[in-house]
Length: 257
Image 1 (cartoon, rainbow, N blue to C red):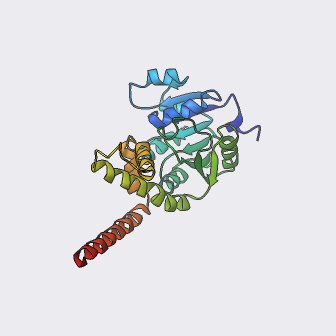
Image 2: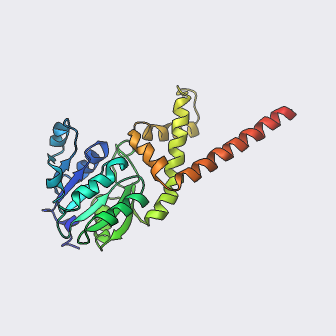
Image 3: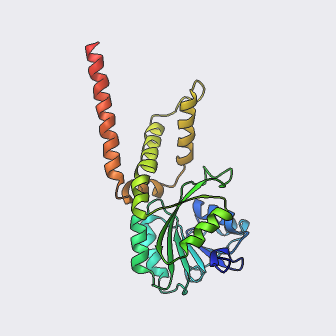
């Protein structure tokens, strides 16, 4: 394990997509690796410099020892196809998206056989990680190669994360409820705002806290959770169906009072 690239202090990590989550990754890895980042936005050099990260071309990032793809679902396949001919043998390709089935299939289909693939999903974002990430959860899905064990060990040992090893399919089944319903409730309640902030119960305060953790997520996050997850539609329809049944029950009770 000491020879693994994910525990080698001289290893290079390249981040593709240097938005809020890409910067969160850099914040927690910049003391451990040589960091490069690629993002088409021309306004990120100052943010990168503050984090000790060099903005580089896609080709330069694709030659790193570990490549973290943090781009939106809409551009994910294009990014993977672009880096496929450039990746060095033995490189570890990691994604960090909210869905796993579709990205895993894309990486396995287009990336060369001589790279390892580990699909991951940090079960937190910039808001929930504002006080640190130690003790937070991350899903790790082995796709190809043996490096998932090194990745999992690094996440536990050096970042203090609680690692959940699972499959892409099981991840998406669980996430369809865990994330899908959370984001739906947050969207609905925000549209009902402004919400009470003074005379509240502890349970309502917890709901408000949950909303605050997701309300500033990029639109692409909600789109991925609700559209790219193959199980989200079924869960969403079941949720609204049960809500409709409950509403009908309450209306019937009112009519009989």
